[in-house]
Amino acid sequence: MHQIDDFSFIDGVGKALKQLQDKGYLLVLVTNQSGIARGYFSEAQFMQLTEWMDWSLDEDYGVVLDGIYYCPHHPEGKGEYRKDCDCRKPKAGMFTQAIQDLNIDPSQSYMVGDKLEDILAAEAAGVKTKVLVRTDKAVTEEGQAKADLVLDSLVDLVKYIK
Image 1 (cartoon, helix red, strand yellow):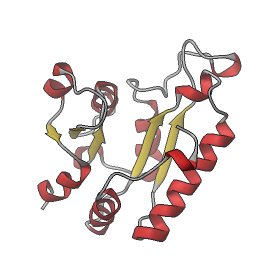
Image 2: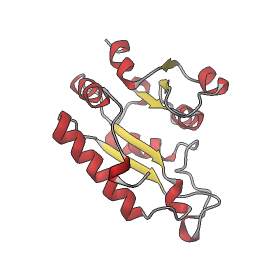
Image 3: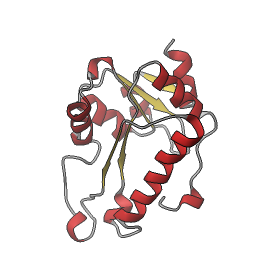
Image 4: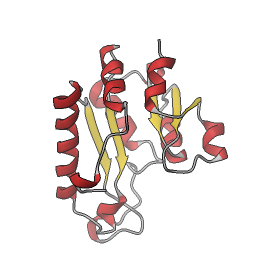
């Protein structure tokens, strides 16, 4: 996804992010973007969408993302983006970079993702609590088994973290 017109926030997520931020949690986006490597969209297009998303969260909910980390690579990508890197999940590179950059204590952290690769990357980085949320992607048995918590939505995490 790289078009602003194709993007919408899941109901309740902006408010939930604000509540988590108000509880003192850092909010960090960590995302694989193989569409860049495959030539579906440019890095500039992805950045434009990401900046709009970041601005919208702040404007509409008072949420400021503390960090945004993305991997534009893919082993079957094109040109400079064709590589087997350390940043692409399930490897821990983006997580370890965020932990270092933002002085995050992974033993006090939650990772929320919707795929097994998210869980594996967080696990490799030493993140204590791995949360799998159900989205339009199928939740696998292995993903459920590796996750510490499986929720229907990020909104439910706020209820879990009292």
